[in-house]
Image (cartoon, rainbow, N blue to C red; front, side):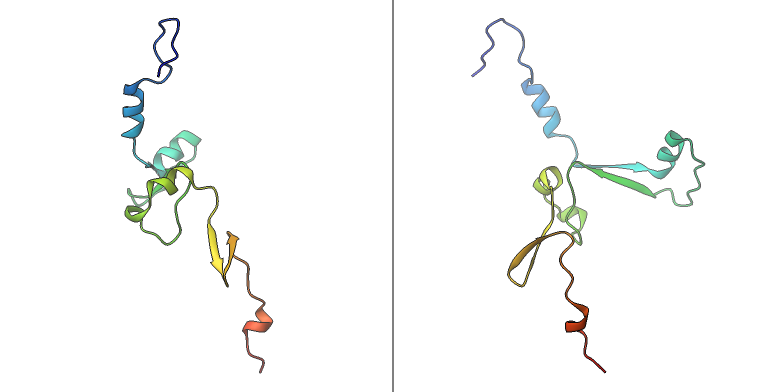
Length: 103
């Protein structure tokens, strides 16, 4: 329901929602563009060298095409399960003394 009592158009229109829905989850910015913007000398041998920008995050060790839209738009922390307990990134390190054998 539109609570629009003064005949103004809604703040976010159906067209706005459609446009936002069709935006990509990630964008790539070539390193040369960033160098120009920052005023640095562009010294890039590979034209494919770029930075990826994503709203929230990417799951490590998961290919880009296998990432979920939910993760890319809502991720705040990465949680690992270690020995039945959940830990935020980085996971706790096991004690080196207990994990290595003594000589």
